[in-house]
Every structure is written in C-alpha cells, then in structure tokens.
Length: 103
Length: 145
Image 1 (tube, each protein chain N blue to C red):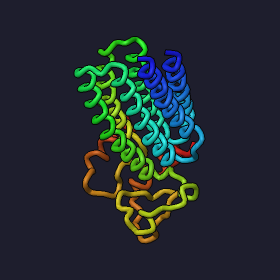
Image 2: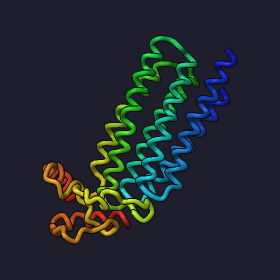
Image 3: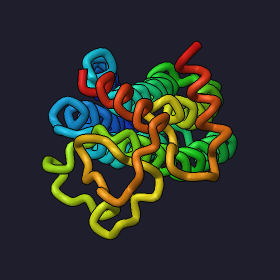
Image 4: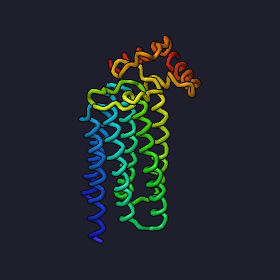
C-alpha cells in the first residue's frame, strides 16, 4: 500500500505541473494541454483510490471522467486562437466564436 | 497473494510516474505542439498501466468489464484530443516553427486553414482579408503577451 501512496504523490506532482502550466502558459493552446493533463491526472487519482480504498464503484466515476474529459478538451480547443478563417466550410463556427469574443 | 500485491504497487508507481513524466514534459518542453505530444503519449500509457493494476487487484467480471470499457474509451479519445489540440495550436499561429524545426504544411503549400500570422510563413500571393487579418493580429498579440 505504501507504493500506492507513492503513486498518488506522483500523480499530485503531475497535477501541480499542469496547474503551473495552466496559470503561466504563454498561449491558449498550452492552457488546453494543461487542462487535458488535469483531466487525466484526475482519472489516475480515481483509479488509485479504487485500489487504495478497495472500492470498485469508483471505476464508474473514472469511466464518466474519461468521457467528459474528452468532450471538455474538444470544447476548450474551439476557444483557441482564430478559428478557420480562410475555409468556407465553417463560416458558421467562425461567426459563432466572433460573437463570443465580442460579447 | 503477496506477489499480486507487489505487482499492483509496482504498476501503480509506474502509472503515477508516467503522469509525473507528462507533467515534467509540460514544464520543460518549449512549444505547445511538443507539450501536447508529451501529455498525450505519457498520460495515455499511464492510465492503461493503472487499469492493469486495478484488474490484478480484483479480477472479478464486473471490474474487468468496466476496465475494458475505460481502456477502449481512453485509448480512442486521447489521441483525438491531442490531434485537436495540435491542430488548434498550429492554426492559431503561435507555434514557433524555428523551435519545432519543420513546417511541412507551409512548405508543401497545404496551409488551407489559415495561418497568416507573424511566426509562420506568410504567403505573398494570399490576399489580405481585412476582417480575418484583424482577427489574427489581435489573437496573436494576446497569445504572445
């Protein structure tokens, strides 16, 4: 069990790195990468807690966290930088993000 | 029993170490593209290693079923989100190509999703759309500052 505690400390170190990069990151893409590592560190912490507490229902929370992390990353990626400005295929998406920026 | 517990502990340390390694890459690598690459690879393998540890700890059918579903969902979605992040980072024009070294879409003339900013190659034959130029300049200033 001491090894599982050590693994939890390592996951906390990774999460601290993600928090630093999310606060400091020079571009918006760096912040999205930090958010993704935050999601993944949360999933790892849930899996380690299911081992540590011997409680299998935490695995269901981990499954939901994996799926929500993917959707959250895709949602954050849409906020990065200028969206496809020179393609005709996503003019609606561009207008939508411009409205969000001005509002 | 003792051997199984030791294997669970070692796999847990390996998975946590991979997450810490992704955090190290996030701190030390110079670019958003390389950071996204480090996080996608290391963290995807870390979660799978931890899932193996969970199965070794309790090999019951319900746990194995849930673990297989988590593994498939994670292994399928993490490269997709890494690809989306890399694409958005390149499209936003804030990736330093002199650090990354290669800018294949600009060299091959495949930049059809709009990267007219200062850090990337600016095509001279591309007409300057005034609204799009305002967008990219404003976003580029925000990204650098």
